[in-house]
Length: 443
Image (tube, rainbow, N blue to C red):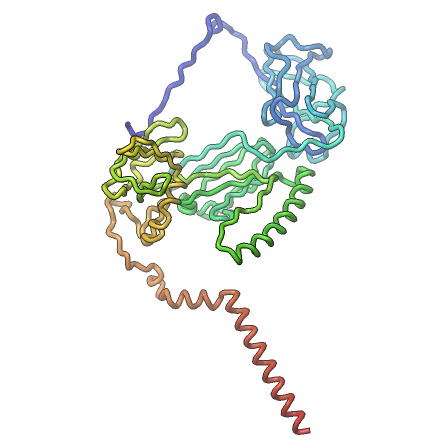
């Protein structure tokens, strides 16, 4: 397999007779949402019909009755400038009316078309966005935060490797949190703040310095924004209360038992897991039973098309390495072939790291930063392997011994401070009692 990047060509094939068609089509397009909750409807939950200015079904389009998609979006192609109206038929417990939506709609949507409004003008030069609000009968419509597309790739930017992450969220202005090791990442690693929300169209984009991401992977949390969606605040407040109660219980249990307890589940949050795009690989091949497999073939396969990008073989001890030049900038996984049984074992990069965690920790290896004992494994100037000094201690460069640093850290530990405070308090109370007793005897 050729590990170099390949550019593809798309061959467009047209049905007989279509190539001679001279008609050009354009839109009206828009989104359908709940007028109270301001949340977009899901796929197939409403039908949008294009009408002419007299209120009759338009003849200037191939497809008139259009189902909305998972973002609540419709798109009707017309082939003639003109004035048009819309009719919306909900499949939920809603009505298409002249009601004015929640005042915050303008921060999330565009021009609103209501029942009884005059016809709007649609031209080829300026396709018009026309959104529609439906009035709920009873409980307003609500849905969980989600996304419809994502891009995840390593890129070369300003002389360094960054990870590009792009999402399109279902809800406009969705809160987006990048979580690395359970901690929210607020900057991209070079001082630039990460966008806190997706935009009005649901787009969110970030370039994050690769070295600040974890070799264990990371996640992104999508949270319905309570600033715009009224039902989100109610749900978030309730969820926070439940989570606090859950955490209290978890702390009590985990303090007595050495068990791993999953984080409390919050249905108002969508969590997207990302396996790391490793920059370097070093470790052992373990099968599903944690048995090491020697002399096995190892394939790096792209998630986008399951094609092999690079291959190697484990040695007699089941050990193997892969250097940056042999790894893709795209999402990939590992495929192993057992030489004895022919069985195929598939592992994500997160699973590989997890199975090799003890080895990686013992050798202080970071597969994202390509370091061992805090030293670069490969010399960036020569491309050759560096000689690793296992006695290397970066803290000594700061004229501070590990013992001193550890002592200072221990002194600042909250538990130590509390114990010291209690001792001081007891000493003061004891001294007070001694003085009081002496004074009483003297009287």
